[in-house]
Structures are given as C-alpha cells and as structure tokens.
Length: 366
Image (cartoon, rainbow, N blue to C red):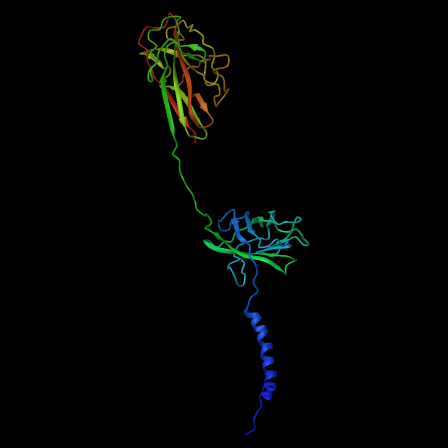
C-alpha cells in the first residue's frame, strides 16, 4: 500500500479548503445583520385616532444616538414592525405637509410622492444634532381598519439616503370611527315666579299705592279721579339658549266686570302704549273707567323694544290675545321684570264689585 505523506495531504486538501472558506464568507455575511443605533425615547403622536379621519397631525420625536448631522429623515408607515413593509389600508400621506421640525440645519425639503413614505431632506447639512429630533406632519388621512395597531419606521441618514445614523420603530393605534363617542343630555329648565310688590314702590317711574300678593291685585275702592297703581315682579330662570318671553292677556274682555257693567281696557295697545289719561266717558261703563298695564322691560323682542319705557311710563289695555311684557334673547341665570297695573274711574262708573283675571305665561325658547 502506498503511503501518503502529510505534506501531500495538505497540498491536496488546500484547494478544497480554500474554496470552502470562500463560500463560507458571504453566507456568514448574510446571516449576521448589520446593526444600527436607535433613537432613544422615540415616539409618534397622532392628533386624532379615529379610523379614516382626515386632516390629522402626526408628530415624531426622539433623541439621536450621536450628534451626526442629519441629511435625510425618513418615515415608513407599515402594518408590521419589521420585515416587508405593507402600507396600512386607507392611509394617505401624499397630501401631507411639513408644518414644523426639530432637525438642525437649513429649512428642509420634502418628498411625499410615495404613499406611506415621508422623506425629509436636508442635503448637505453639516450642523450637528444637539437634542430631540422630529417632525410635525399635517393633512394625513388615517388608516381605515378600526381598532388596529400600526407602525412607523423612522430612519435618519448622514447622506442622501444610504448611510444610516439611527433607526427606530414606534407604534400608534387607530380606534373606531367615533373613537369614544361621548354623549350627555341636559334637561330644559324653567322657573317662573310671580312676587307681590308693596305700596310705595315704583314701576317704570310710577309709584304704587296698592300692595299686591303673588296672586292678587287688590285695588280696593276706586274713587273718581284717584287712580290706583299696583305692581308684580316676574322672575325667570332658564337654560333655554334662545331665552324666553312673558306675555299677559285678560281671561275676559274687559277684565274687570260686575254683572252687566264693566271697567274698560285702557286705550293704549301693546304695540303702541301711551301715557295714562283719565277716563272721560259720559255713558255708564263706556270709557267711564280704565284698566291697564305697563312694564319696565326696555328690550322687548317684538315691535319697538322700549315702547313702554320711552317717555314712560306708557300703558296698554289688556285683550284676550297674549301680548309681550318681558323678553330675553338668551338663557338667564335669573332675571326680574316689574309690571304695573293701573285702574281709574270717573263719577259715572256704575257701582259694583268688579273682578276678573289676567293670565301671565312664561315661554322659554330652546
């Protein structure tokens, strides 16, 4: 048997070993990925998490690992954190705009032509990074798949896009189209209070000589040529955004009646109230007595707003149709209007116990 020397074996095996080593080198390079530094405290904040929402602002932030000047800053929006990047369904970044950035250097330019990829260029930048770095993008349309987490892969480059400085992947969540729908209801409120006014008070410049209760106007005995004046305070509290109106009407016309006799309504009207004038009728129960009302509200909502207070007090006679005596265009915490009542007779007014009813109504407008 021929003996094979070690030297021969080594020489014979060398080509094979060399080939094996050459083959091993690229395989090793394929199995060991290149590592890059990462932004610290990296984040992406969205201004609106609703699925499909448009005009949303996306803001990135993070601290670079080194002070190397950034010449390109890129964001890829993906459905996964790693591997092949699939753009989230419904996401639209082509209409975005760069509204702010914290990248050192000159004003950057942008490239948003590829949907799902945002590129910020500061080509030739030589200014070192000194702190947090990020961008604010406006006008983005969110992905449309509800209740899903998506990922933004953020990469910075020291050149036009080949030499990576830092890379980080951050997550953001898209909720339902309503995010969290918040609902609440507030019940309408109205408090309407009628309060009596004592004798010796004033109403729209006239002095009262009758004390009223919340439900009565006790004029007492009327004497010829001696008018009697009374008043009530009307207080409203309401949350009606369009305010309220208070109206007055007589349950009958005229209000004050005694059998077949009556005390007529004053000649002024709600639309055109006038200064008081004494009754001058010469036929019983025909303008031989008057009953009327006034209000100190100078901002009424219909007609001339200050018609009762301008050169007043001005008075009007009641009718069976509701007429405005107080008004507010907005809701009020509390607001009080004083209305006055006045009665007067002459010597031809028939004797009798006159009575009647006036009706006050407060109507809020929601």
